[in-house]
Image (cartoon, rainbow, N blue to C red; front, side):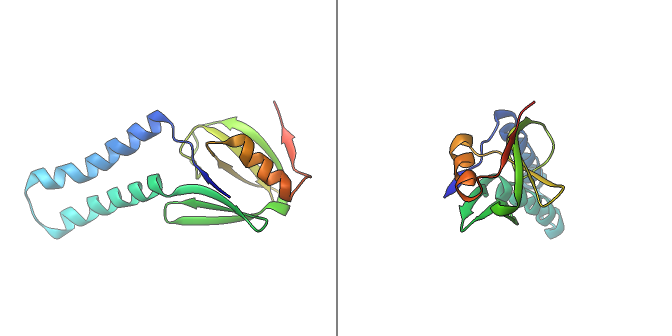
Length: 135
C-alpha cells in the first residue's frame, strides 16, 4: 500500500522559492556559460525530485521510504515503537507533523503520511508488538 507524504504550506513555499532562486537568475543574467546553468539547474532538479518523489510504501513486511533520489527500507518486524512528533528536523518527510519510528535497537526515522491512522494500522498488521508512545 502506498502513502503520500503530507506537505506543509511553509515547506512548500520554501521549496518553490529555492527552486525559483536556482532557475531564474541564470535565465535573466544572459551569461550562457554551461557551468552557470548546470549547477543551479541541477540543484533545482534535485529539490523538485525530493518534492515530487517522497512517499512511503508497505510491501511484504517492509516499509519502503522514497525521498527523491534516496531510498530506504525498514523491516516492519524490527519496528519497536512509534510516536507522533512535531519537529522541524530533516527526515524523509515534508511536514512537521510526523510519525517517529524507532527500530533495530536505537535507529530512528520520521515519516509524514497524509493518512497517519491507516499507515499505523498497516504497520500493526505486520507487527502487532509495536508500542505506541505518548507524551
